[in-house]
Length: 265
Image: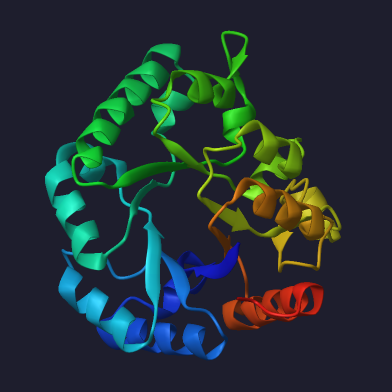
C-alpha cells in the first residue's frame, strides 16, 4: 500500500499555478509521488487541466484520485471524464452527498440513483467512481444507517474512499469497516483521532474529538496498514483537514510512518 498525500491538506498554498507547482515540489521533496487532487485551484475553470498534468509530471507526481463537485459529476459527466483522462487519473472522487440526502430517505435514494447512472457513464471511459465518508453516514434514516444503505444500494462498481478519522468519530472501528468494505476500497484516507481536548474545545466548541497528525493520536495504524495490505488497497493518503501548520503536520505524519515502516513508499 503506497503512502501519498491528500492535497486538501495543503490547499491554502495551491490556489495559483505557481503555488500548485510549489506544493508538488515540496511533496516530492518529502518523498511522495502520489497525491489526491482536492481543494486546490480548480480545473478546468481556473487552470487548464493540461497545465495541472504538466506540473505534476514535471515534479514526478501521479494524481490517483480527485474530489469533484457533485454538480459537475452529475451535469458535466463527459467533461469530468475527459479531464480525468487528461490527468491520467483513474478515479473520480465524490467528497460528500448533498445535505438534503442526509436526513431524507427520498433524497438519499435520489442521490444513490444518480450516482449509479454516473458510474455507468464513467465506466465507458474506463474510469472509476469513489465516495468519501464523514461521520454522518453512521446516522440513521428510518431505522437504517446511511452507510449501510449506501453499501447495499450503490452499484457495486462504486468504491469507497474510507476515512479512518471519520469512521472513528462516528463511533466505529476503522479496521472493522475496512473488513466490511473489503474489495470496495482502492484509496484510503488516513488521519489520526484524539479525544484529548483543551477546555475551550470541550466546553465552548463542544467537540468530542479532533483530528491530528498520523501517529499522534489513538488510532492503530499498524493494524490499519496490515488490513490494507491484506485487501490490496492501493493508496493510503495522508489527509489533515485542519492543521495550523499543514507542512509541519504532514512532516510529523511522515516521520511517524517512516519510523513505523521504514519508508513512506
